[in-house]
Image (cartoon, rainbow, N blue to C red; front, side):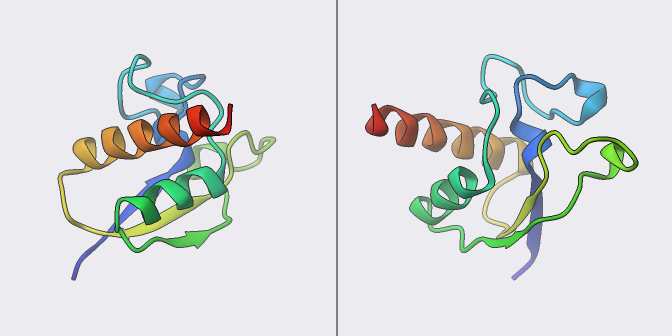
Length: 96
């Protein structure tokens, strides 16, 4: 099955589109962590492979949100990002 790469920067609401955010700020999550994204992907049965690496646009700068996950491609990327953000929000609400 094909893999899909999702960077933390893709779902970080504190980033601009030119800095790597792929979805609107209303759908994105503020300061996501790699562990949150991994848990969300596991809850959604996406079989994540986690990699702690720096986002390409951040090379030579302080790493704001380092990390990415590789997922089995089940949906279009935009839909996958929305599902991950929704799941991260549920995980954060459950902690409170």
